[in-house]
Image 1 (tube, rainbow over the protein chains, first blue to last red):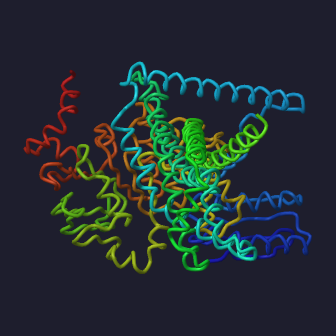
Image 2: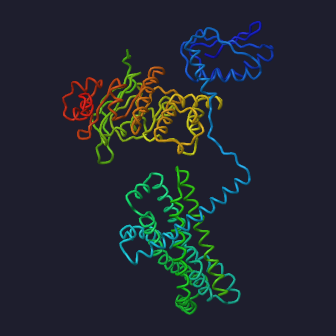
Image 3: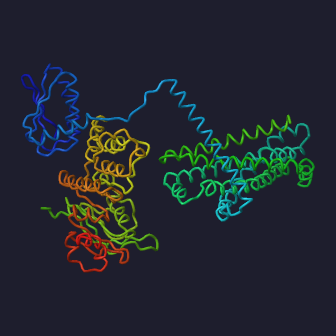
Length: 368
Length: 256
């Protein structure tokens, strides 16, 4: 039942029935305040004689009402309060007002700058240590082949490589198709139809093959590595491995990097083959070339050098993608949110590093 | 004394995941206002049974009646009303990591009650004080210890003053002092709010100090092997596996 309002000479009396709900009282707060204001009354009485069952919600609602009217200099008085009620009300009030918040260190620009510099130096340091550890581990494989967990590596090669063939095949095929189609429109004007084969073949072998493959691997595998290792970190699996005496880099990171570095060049070859198939299809059906002339043209333009150039680049990209994926996973500190952040960051920095490395190589090969 | 009003009635329930039988011939009732415990060793299906009682899992045959309504009907028609009436504290807390403790508790309040946010915050602080966590309102779950997370999750479970409170291992992994505090909290909530409590536990101390009735699930028989008040089961049940389950208690009583 909603509360009953009676306006007395110099007070307003609100009677609460036994089964009143907190919502009903809160609903009337505005009305009570309005009446107090219009009648210029400085006292509010709450009659709780009928109230013998109340919960913390009702107490919170009364407290809310008291806070609002107190602000306007109006006092609250209970009628028929029991000792039990007063105790509960006092206790509730004392807790609500004793809010402690987390301590925050006061900062200014200098302190912020210092914190930023220190954390940057720290993060560069951890990355260098991590990279060094990886290179030492890779070196160790040649001295002590047992360093590498062979079975794990093979399973990962299947996951990173074999499982990715359909998507890489499809995307490369369509890429080849689109490239051939778009260039054919221009080349047709000069009667240079046959050079579509050279264009698709060269572009895929040297640049687009390795880049496309690595970007797909970054999205598929780099993210998976980060999520996997990040989850292991928050469920204390990494701590467990550490206290059992395992080196995390050798146990978790090394198999992932080795597996990726082995399969990505193979995927790149697949990618090249499928893209050229796409080009061939356009050549035959749109440019009226024969299959043999297309393949012959491809053969004369493409040398082993070009293909090797792409494959070597893809090895570097694979290393970068796997390395950054695992690293982001290891930086997870707490909570599921951190895992999400690490996964996103693994993909973004993976792709960024691929493009950066590719530009660097392009410049290097032109001027050196 | 306790009125004999069945709040939960489970009849001929059999739980099976594909080919694997988890529990069979499960029959028991929980009366309004009592503290009821489902106990049993690891892997005896306690948590699975709990998840069926709250409608999270649905791999059973037979009838689960909640306040004389079939759970299957409730799930189809009025699951939200039902969820409003129950509170669940999960074994590992299950607090939302991206929110502070206060936000974790105001979340269900704001969803189900039409009240101002400042009132909801007051209630959240009050609930936290009930589990001895006042002052930690602005902390994130990752900033506090395991026992504190557990207490915070109980605070969240009682946020809506539920009629039935399900507690999955409320005292596991806690120190004896905190465990006793949680036992007392459960008892106090049961008294003041008349909340029916359903605990899952293998903490013998909790069972003997606060529960009115227990059922004991067995991993081998895959069913209930003992039912009644803890003292009765402890004193009179002659089943070998029941005796074995209470062995630690017996040793403790003999002063070893």
